[in-house]
Amino acid sequence: MTSHAPEGYDCPFCAVVQGTEKDGVATKQVDIVHQTDLLTAFVSSHQWPANPGHVLIVPNGHVENLYELPSEWAEPFQAATQLLARALKKAFDCPGISTRQHNEPAGGQDVWHYHVHVFPRFEGDELYGSDRQRVSEDVRSKQAEQIRRALKILEEREYGEE
Image (spheres, rainbow, N blue to C red):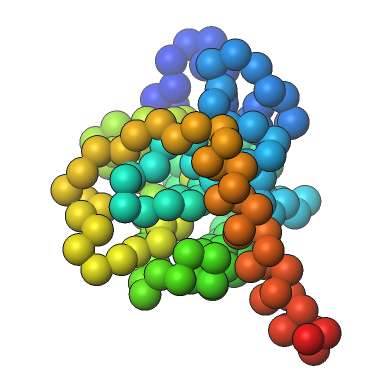
């Protein structure tokens, strides 16, 4: 498979997973809401105005797109997507969730590391009709905390610790 990353590509998602905070990478460690040996989920540094708490789920190892994703990773990614969708519903009291995943330039991919978007959705939010905007670290930190609290509540319910 042909890589679409430019020569010398310095992957921003690899930096997040590796715990590296550097200039030019907006996402910080405080944005991480869920992490396993296989994947990391974090609040996106760019969000659509009416969809607070947009989360990205990425593999911890560098995989450029869906074509390269090992098939045995599909179930853990779907499980994480489902978990984060439930957490966003709880954290932001949203009536719906959307997920997206892009591959190659013609498919809308603009970061050359496989990732799944999970969006909280609201009636009339115009997700597909508006432009994303950079979100401050302070706002993301608060959103991440809301999501982590929701994940904790979901975990407690699953294990009967209410």
